[in-house]
Amino acid sequence: MPCVPISGLILSALLLILAPGLSFAEPSEAGDTSDEGYETLLLVNPLEERRKLEKSTADNPFAMLPHKTNYLLPFTWNSSPNPTPEDPDSDIDNTEVHFQISIKVPVLRNFWDGRANLAFAYTNRSWWQAYNKDDSSPFRETNHEPELLLSYAMEKQKGRIHLSHLVLGLNHQSNGQNGLMSRSWNRVYLSSIWEIGDRTAVIIRPWYRIPESKKSHPTDPGGDDNPGIHNYMGYGDIRLVYKVKEEQNLALLLRNNLRGKDNRGAIQVDWTFPVHQHLKLYVQYFNGYGESLLDYNVSVNRIGLGFLLTDWM
Image 1 (cartoon, rainbow, N blue to C red):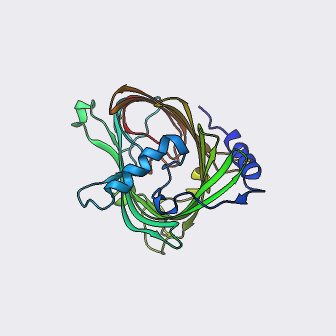
Image 2 (cartoon, helix red, strand yellow):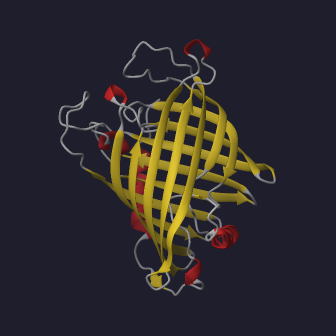
Image 3 (tube, rainbow, N blue to C red):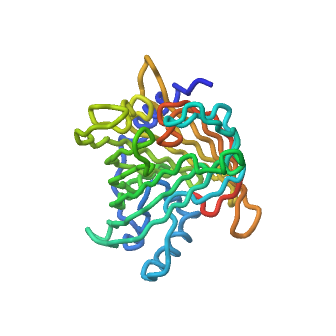
């Protein structure tokens, strides 16, 4: 299935619509702005309890805070699974387990006029061939993503549009493999977190890839684990989250290389709704490039069903 070139147009349009003409307003509780991270959204009503909870547990050395979403998808189906580079004839099942674990730890809080917070975060994403008994159910791919995050409370607002935070991030992502299977890259990004009314949030995240040092690598003598990754992953992404009703969310992730020729990108749609006090049913659909580092240059068409432990809001 082809990728979605219109995502690049949507990204450009939102940057033009949301950015200009905002006025500055003092935050009501600057000392409570502990919302570092890419998927920590700041809708006033849904996240007020989360911010209070994070503040109450920040000094507990045994407590870990959620960063991105935490979920388990026991069933996912990929229409065209990608064989491993080391074994192009390998038998990869269409069905596999996919899960994500994402945590963060505050390092410094409430500095720089009480508006800034520094945190360390770690995200693990795994794709497990649990039902592939013929190959002893291997983990096909695992991505490790440590980050250092500096967030600053902006509190700029015009009408129903509210620019709440900017987040400067230093990001490393790797699959921990070597040889032909090795994938890794480093990025610096600047996220802007916007609220529109009390049900919608938008996160715009452009990034810059830090060039790799010159070294010998099996896939590229120039020293790049991911040759031409910007042609597939682009230079940023955008996430929209809409609260349909209490405890039920719809989310959309868009990524595009913004090129007329050889246009590539990705779209992910998430739907979550509660089934238990601390558990939500989670439906995830992904189409495009860059779902995992191993598949950064391979188009994936996947749908998954499972459970969400921590949501965006």
